[in-house]
Image 1 (cartoon, rainbow, N blue to C red):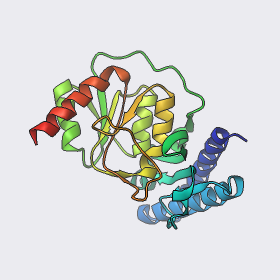
Image 2: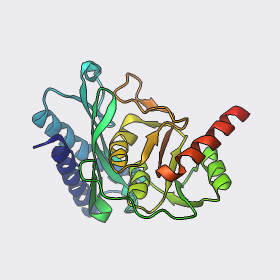
Image 3: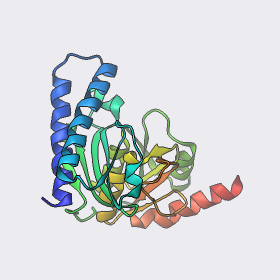
Length: 246
């Protein structure tokens, strides 16, 4: 099984497990999120260690012992990206399974179990025809001031959405054009979505245009930009002006 096949298979199966846990109707929304995280994480961790025992592993739901830092190949997973949305029985949550090689997000699969969809880095599809007025995905609960400023400058339509994976895949799926996040994330929030987005021909970078680097000792990542190539220059230029004004 190739790395891409493994990533897609694990993301799909973890998603099915999460749907089964949710269908059990035994939990409050908060308890459901915890149960889902634990169930999916246990499956993903055991499966990756079984199938790729020589690779490193980083999961949101697993304590890191630092051994991954000496590895060239590191699997980075988020068992439930968008725990709140999962607990609320929405569809804008995801499962992330990625492989970073020498710090670069090379292989990724993002499952959207509520939509019965798995998007893969090894099976890119053509981007839809561009639209005249861009759409920006933003947080449902706390849209960042920088994103709101970019939207205003571009005249963009705002699309509130849940998890990072759901937002990024909205760009891949042609439902929006720009995903700018400046509120801070962690490596597992973006590694799989970045691998999938880059494979589909989208721009991926930090908010200042610099590269995204994974498998770092500090897993915090301050910002992220995933967008259609047509809007990359304008978004980065606006961000540069904002930074200069500070």
